[in-house]
Amino acid sequence: MFFTGVRNATLFKWTVGGFPVTEEHSKKTTHPIFVLAITSYGPEVCPCSRKNWYDKDDRRYIRGGACTSTKHIIRDTTYLVEEHRFSIPRGVCYEEGFKEDFTNIEHRDYLPLYCMGVVKDDDIKG
View (spheres, rainbow, N blue to C red):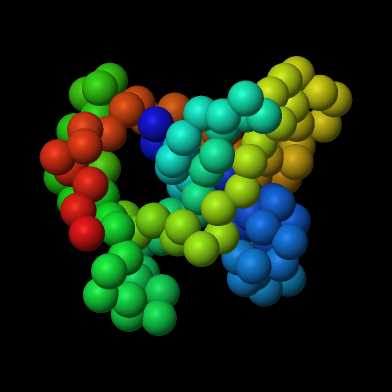
């Protein structure tokens, strides 16, 4: 599954500083996350980026133009930053402060965490 709207500051926190952010952009910008696996602890996810970090030849990506199970189009090629994977504990979305922590609610153009659907295996390359 592919989700949009996760604050960069949240990715920095959940990846224990692995996902870089600048103070200027931490509350304003977001990146998508991709569900790699469902575990007994909760979903294992990784951040995504339109940039191929470190120009890794073997980095997996979702091809631009891919259509999800809910008929949403992933416009740009989107790279999976799997070296910064993390697990989200089951039930965390019901905890107080989840919306404020995970999304860019403080930004004037607030967009909530949004599930764009399941990406077909054929659309994941690399």
